[in-house]
View 1 (cartoon, rainbow, N blue to C red):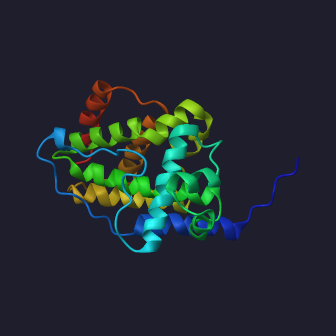
View 2 (tube, helix red, strand yellow):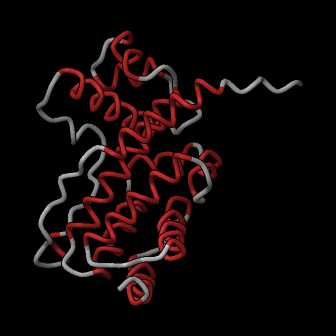
View 3 (cartoon, rainbow, N blue to C red):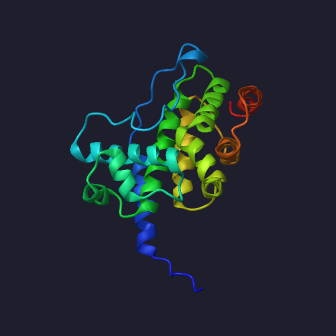
Length: 220
């Protein structure tokens, strides 16, 4: 079967959406006083907050998508289900994202930003790494996708090239710099590869803690 030609304008539009979301200012919380106070990503529909109508609708779309991903995985996600879960009219959802792929990019961008906040909330570098790894491993949407549609995780489990990953690498570099780390490009890439490994294989706290302690030594 012949492959469908790539819609370059469509792809560029998706990447622009991802870049804009990642480039928006992040309000990072103050460092936590102990590991017990480290923030974690709590799941669907928890971050829809006051703001203008466009922002509320966008966050409702993200919340709806997280809910559907947790329940059904990627393959069975539909725009109709996302609109219903987010409490949006379908026309409103399509005003913000043109299709499923664009929606998933928006979700990835938003969750990357939330992970940056988790990273910033810890008092030490090892605690920050552990908290971020734990948030990824236990993220309700990823747990759902691992259960219902594990093969779909391959596309995001390994850092790749392209403008989307460039934006995520820059976000990672900024989060490290905020903690006083002068990480090189190679160290940023190593960190991303370590973190994304928990998308498919959650591991356990003891393993994550010991690995985080060792990795933190190279990120000073």
